[in-house]
Length: 249
Image 1: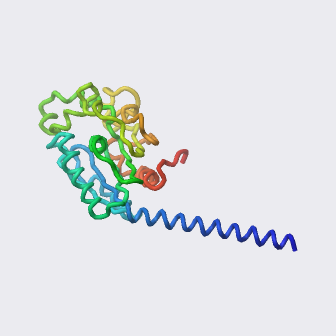
Image 2: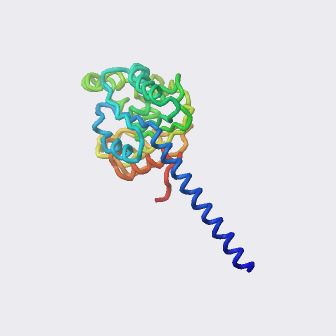
């Protein structure tokens, strides 16, 4: 009799745990359905470079805004306080209490950091940065005085250096969970020769870091294609859902 009673109690507890797990997953999915994800491409790219990421996140239930912005025509300040701020405000207006996540590539991460100097995101919001030049890029140092670089990359291209005049050195820590994924593989060895330590062809692994970052991951990918890698997309999604990356997988 006692054994049967113990078995019944054990089965009931297991059932309750299973129901709780399903409820937690349902609640998480509902939160995903309510959450926005704003995608910001890198310098000289368009929203098409983030299309694979956008399609995946939409399939996961997020409300995705794959933003196109004139990365080579305006300064970091103008872009962050203009189109980025306006996009966040539109999301807030439609769903005031929903989290607003960001997934950014390269320059996009700097725009979010600049935006967050004077603004706050709703509770539950998170940011994933892919290959961000958070401490500047030696390649920007190398090319910033070159006429063609200045003409092609515009004002923002002059702001991504590693020196004290670089915009990254004027930004305070951000008050939002930040996960950073950067690469250590290059398709541009002529640039990598100018970058100390492991790099992705544009940004060194060390210069991608932020002191306040929540999690950090290095993958064997190059700067220009990291956002399209299936494993990177899965890791970015995991961070948005759980606030951290999967390590050791």
